Length: 312
Image (cartoon, rainbow, N blue to C red):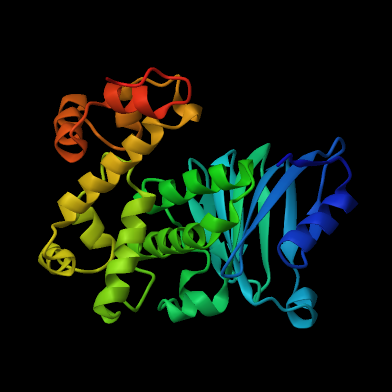
């Protein structure tokens, strides 16, 4: 979807108040400019991509008192520099880092220059159910070095750039929330570990996390276990009789197979597709692919793409 272009501060204040919750614009220079585009997801989540020049927005005491919200705002900084202040805390955002703003208390966000951000609205009730104490997580720095933060940022970019297929929306929302929870876990901001869930629920949460991170070559068993507060041995028990490593390999191979038969990726080489799904070595992927599908990537592509020559 195309972004909405805004050139007047009053219109910007109205638009962000509609997209998030009521906010006040306290500073906007001459020549103000901004764009915003928004995508709604199931589970009460919303993602907005924002480009804006130097400015400051506030959540005032009056707005807190008279216009409550049942969401928190997660601000991911892609480019530029932003300063978020709430209560007695201050956090500086840049280089892919993120933080949480709580609309039940006054706060302000200052963009010191041109800024590119992704803003998530996440239901407060869902975070509390996941073990989050809102007073603890607000204005906590979520570093851009976190795999969950990077993955969630990448997912958000994809979601706002195109319409979400309704058939995929629920799964995407679940993956986005799990990544968000993983980002909070990475800084020790959740009280309830994954281990407290039932066996089936734990496995679903962890599989959603894996699916969302298949393209990252750094994804391994220790990282997955650490993100979900379980041991590597417990992780193995959850997946038995299959192993977690076998599940990851098979899921990656299935993505490679899918892309090889998708005309949208027809210009990519099989090696590029392999790297896209987290395989560090093309030869390793090729051997595993032949074992899994009893065919080479070239065979699959020749049969699967419309207008291609069928393999004899």
